[in-house]
Length: 323
Image (cartoon, rainbow, N blue to C red; front, side, top):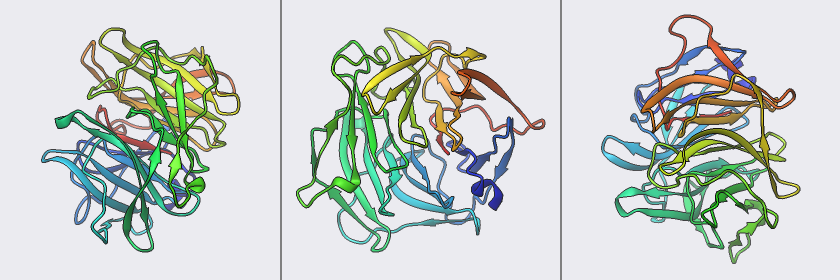
């Protein structure tokens, strides 16, 4: 099992079975079902998932059969065990779905935002979990976007959140830098240039048609794929934010592109290739279990086949997906 993590392959959290599944993407799909007993998380969707450079997997919250969760768990691939991280202190994030979890260069975990559908509450709070003291602390911040589901962290620890500041579409991106937090907190910075135009309008409320975002390993590109809305339908377009210029670039790849969909997994591997897994198309009620790879070096999409019969996980959407 160690070799898969050492080579930084794509990993998938199975949102229906409650099992951790690894997709080993060497132009073919293989599946490894890991330990699911003991302290393993219950089956869930819309959870926050991050994989550290050392291959450890952290999972927070999500939607379970019993409602919304606020638990934080650690999967260690080297001894194949799950462990729940109990928090010290009284302060902790509320239960939620659609949040973003990541590890910053300071070695601590950070959590951003999410959604509570019962109250239609979009969350823009930022929390830090100290792995030494096992304590949560909220970071005071201002200027955050009231958007959820459109956020991801770069390897440098910066979090990018995409927002619709008009009905025209995704035309703004904000950045949070954990290393720039002071005793007074943090002010979100707008990083998109004036007049920047990204993907057209996408739904960002409780939906099965959310757009997916993921950052390139060098942190210079943040990719945006798919999603849609009732008014405009589903999409399979691919954009990226050029972090240096603050502008959006619409890509027009050749090859076999994924079908239109939302709530798919999107991840960028260390070699810069972009992977799409699964998802759901609201207009056709189609759920997917396929895997596609976009190669920026040749601007081409390609579908990946299974290494053997039964080697692909069942079709699903709202699964965690990380490289």
